[in-house]
Amino acid sequence: MFELIKDINSYLSNPFLTRIPDQVERPFLLLFRLTLICVFASLTALMLLTLLIQYRLIPEPGPHAINRSNLSKPMFLFRAVLLAPLLEELIFRAQLRRFSGGIFFISFIIGAFLSLVFKTYWTFLVSPVIFILLFIIYRFTLASSITKKYQFWRGIFPWYFHVTALCFALIHLSNFEKGISLLPLGLLYTLPQLCTGLVLGYARMNYGLKYSIALHALFNLLPTLLLFTK
Image 1 (spheres, one colour):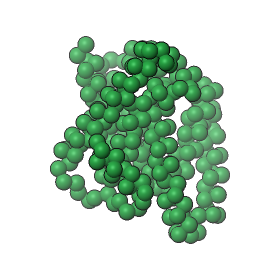
Image 2 (cartoon, one colour):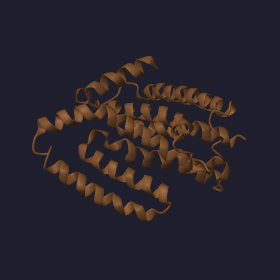
Image 3 (tube, one colour):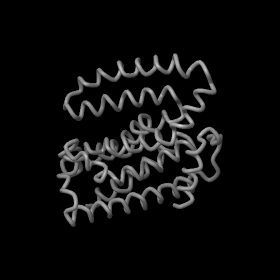
Image 4 (spheres, helix red, strand yellow):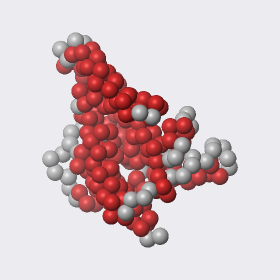
């Protein structure tokens, strides 16, 4: 666990020194170790969250989506283990190595946040406008100079990396009945997702997107199987 934190800090100090290997040695062992780290970090965060609620330091978040789901077990398994990992990794992690992808991500997240606040998907129409404005700014400031682009990305990336994990966590407020109304304490309710998001980001940056997708699927598989045994 501490080695992982050290590796993440080392990577964030200079993300361009880390390259995705063409072939990873012992990929199944790697996924197993990363899954254990995700489980440990998530359970630790969940225990902290439970204590905060138990001692009434924060209010109850309300019913969880699992308790309100009317999906059949096969469909729930498909969404939790296949669909959600694929879509969430494409949105939150795929763009970490692409500057233009980061612009798209920021535009998308702003639209998603506004849709949660105003409870309408029409607010997503603002995302293309924001993307165009940010891309124009990028095109006429950084795109013309590789040096400027490198220096800017190197300086901002540690912040951006953590912001993507934070957004990944907060988007899971939709799992609760109260949803966005849990803010500004929302991050406390999604601490497990924040910890998992950091590890998934590390896997994507150091081993490739397919490893973060596989790790995400394995992590979701464990609680899903436990749910089915009830």
